[in-house]
Length: 218
Image (spheres, rainbow, N blue to C red):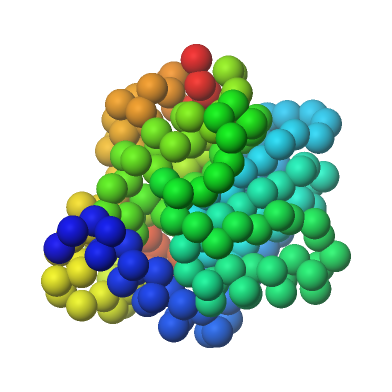
């Protein structure tokens, strides 16, 4: 399956899941924990320009906005983006949303201080392209934050993609912290720092091994 076809099917899948997604989402069930972890991982004082790639229902985007940052976000799924917009409005938070695949989003080069990708890489046909996009839009010294997990440990909580679609996604089973560190290095980022130790336990059902990493554009 070609990457463009796979990405279109992934977007359609998440649009169908969008209405019920936040009812079981970790960033809703453990909202205060996620906010504390991201606040620490951003390592910043004052207002920054934040871009959330593959925002879904807006988990990182809404946290960043609640911390006082200027936030832009994109997602290819119309349904997920509608839920994100609704959540932002209900919370009184200002986020600029764009419906676009990560590679096609219109964020200008060197226009962000922080870029976030939470639970995104596992569901992309070309995950390295997303990290290269993050590198492109970050200013020198800017910070990328990547969070993901080894979802095959508790697959019942993840996607039910058709087999042909799942087979076209190189990280469909999830990824380990070491794999993510290698990918960040390949994309041109400096040494990564981990933050998942700030959670008392895995924030996902099934005790999924997960990570929160940050790295800077050198």
